[in-house]
Image 1: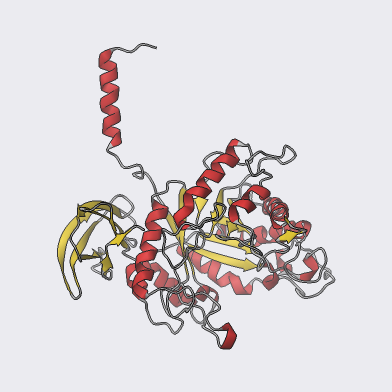
Image 2: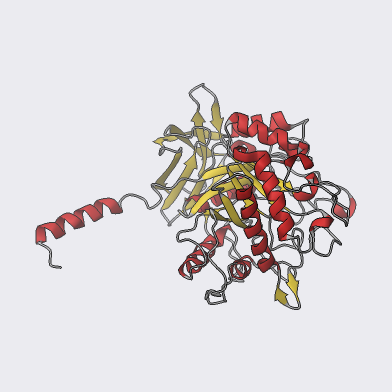
Length: 461
């Protein structure tokens, strides 16, 4: 249809005005914190207090079916009503979930294996082919017991990894994904049967990189959604109802911008691959359009881990860079930190077999990242003459003013004061100065001063 020149000019001016607003201007991203300390009575109160002080007010709890079930190693199912929450021992989890509810913190509850032996088809171990029917009954009990204390559920932790679900492959073909689909459908039905009319349930919780024993996440996604390699849907599979896709976008020691060679692997630096895959799945009718992504487990491991650990400074810088990458992708609605404190290092051949992604060492000493987490800052070189500063006053949770310090070594002075957006974030482009480092400072209304560690200018590989 023809338009008058004046109308065209007005439209062009409006579009130009909108173009200067950053694409992420309306983007928000929740931060979920996972700390095993929350389940330990001796450290629970301290852990909640520290997490609150760091500016996070949302927690993830992993509930292992085997932990709460009666006679978990029995091969014969005991006689009990599996939908009755009174038949289970929830004591390991109740206090943490109750404390979060009392504080008004949303809880993400990931329900996963290992499972009771009697709840598997062959009844030989705790991971191989869990019974969807038994899982539906269990999830009914979960819903009845926790009800609205849980804001969001996720079904299964890393189902593409043999540590949580077996078999991953059978006769050379992916087996875990189709079994996971059955568990997801059963789990969702169980939550509804337990009285939750419209539960928010995440699908996936996939690990980032596959191989000979672990199914690659996008291969898993396609198989679980009944899609071919070209994203054609099997018509016998209906659309799945999910609140979002959950993924663990861990990266390699090379840093957040590492991109795996295999295109079916998804680290934080390749998160666009997951966005594209979900869009193709939606186009095929397997899921709803514009499916949100929740990065429900993430961390950067530091020394003393001898294999994947980076320096304390790199851990702090890589965490902030990773959060910026997630924040800059509007489809990502949730990010996370795993853990508060490193796992026990262990001894002998098992030494450092856990995670060193905490903000504290296993002995409780704070790492550099403990100081940077409340006020993360990125200084990213965008050209030969420019640096993009991105930061957040996490404890603020609202529009506020932050101060950027500049210098090097032990000498830093005020560089600039910026006003954040409504959620505490800011971005600014500043001139590049060789060897200059930056720090972020925020003062709370109560007068508490948060000053982050020195952050080096990062040049993207």
